[in-house]
Image (cartoon, rainbow, N blue to C red; front, side, top):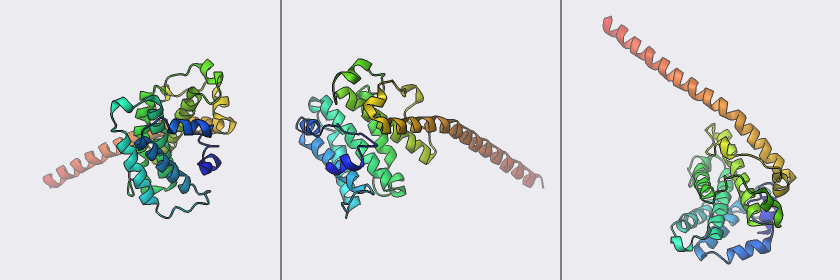
Length: 240
């Protein structure tokens, strides 16, 4: 856990700032959710290039985390509390980060679920927690490391991951721009470093959308033109 706070948290604050609060949350969830989270944390931390911990079996470790994460989502509704759902979201974010670090194999799903599948599941959970709604600003400054702050950071990390996935795969963002907006308190909640990184991802994500649309139109136009030429050639061949 110390490695996470050293290598990942300064840029992508997925978890609580307080280790004590995180341990408290872990004690409030079922063993399946807890084991899935710890396995995902272990995999993401070991995958980090700056980590001094060698990951001797990345596929096996991520497979265990994936299986536990999927299993935890099928638990009974009665045990799906807010702490449990939030921890599941954080688990999916860690798995998405781990998949991104390992590169094209993970991206395409050649060595396990692709990054996009983790992002899609994480976005669904975030919507169920209403994280896309504009936060109540007073709650963002009322309590140190409050649930509102943790959720706000998790939402912005998810937005950054989604924008990066869209740019790196040249595909549309799964989170629309209408659900993404900054509030003045975000710089304090995220920290100056993450705040500016989030703004950069947001701006780049907005600029890449028109390019994606132009690319899609050009592909459609090229396909239509090619189909028309093929029909013309067939007709010429028949007449000849």
